[in-house]
Length: 353
Image (cartoon, rainbow, N blue to C red; front, side, top):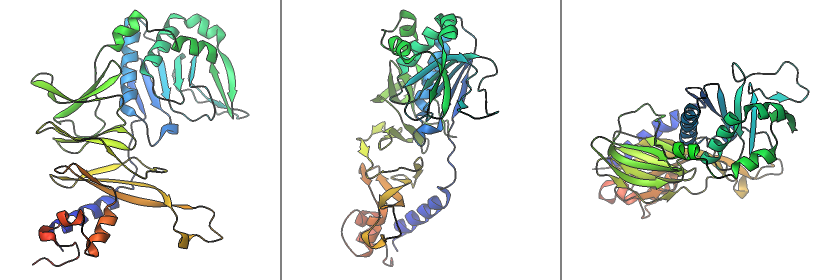
């Protein structure tokens, strides 16, 4: 077998053996008097980078308004068919209808509680609600009511009041905070990387270098779904759940946008591993159609779980959507990307001399 393919397969074997372990996601964070939490309803798409930016901007806004009491911001918890936002002054507890002794406060003492349940994460909208709550605490306390959604009892002011606040223009105070820069927060263990990002004016800017030696902007994005640091000089920036850019710090290289195909029922966050200087493996599990010969009268479902491995080649800026398919073609002696993975055009199943 070609030497390069042997190394590739060994690396992927180790990756497959470890990728099904639980991938840690930072669901809670505290920034001064502001606590943020990502509800499990958003998994596996938690948007931790944007939630962090919202929490930091809310902290700065509260400081400008001299408000030091607790603020709790929750994003994406699944309550079924509900309004986009809830706003209250409570301890953050959610109670199931008819449940006994299941009240679990999320704050040590009552504070401003804002829940964003669904839809795009609107940073400006959350900041407007934070300012409104700080300036109108007494009216919120007197007007909030227990509302029932499905099996849950949630305290909030009316949806009409919330929508009115969201549709107002930004105040001068909110706009000042909105324009400040929030440095990107690394969720990975590696902190020393030549590529970073910041959030400002509602956009993410990915850059190489640093603020002291000079920055070179490489990407300007509406959102960052994930920021995968592979090495000191390699990063994959996911702008959505199914698309990414490759960024190299050494030469400030930025790839075109690549879209991952056939991600129906994406089960876990992507596992991304560098396989050397010019290859990156992207692995995940998803649902694929069940072949006709595997369907029987006893099987109700028409899909099955498949573990997929994609290969991105940095030098060619090429994304191979299914490595299994490429290896199968190589075994059969067919042409394709497999020829470039092996020296001298050898297939992965031939003996090297």
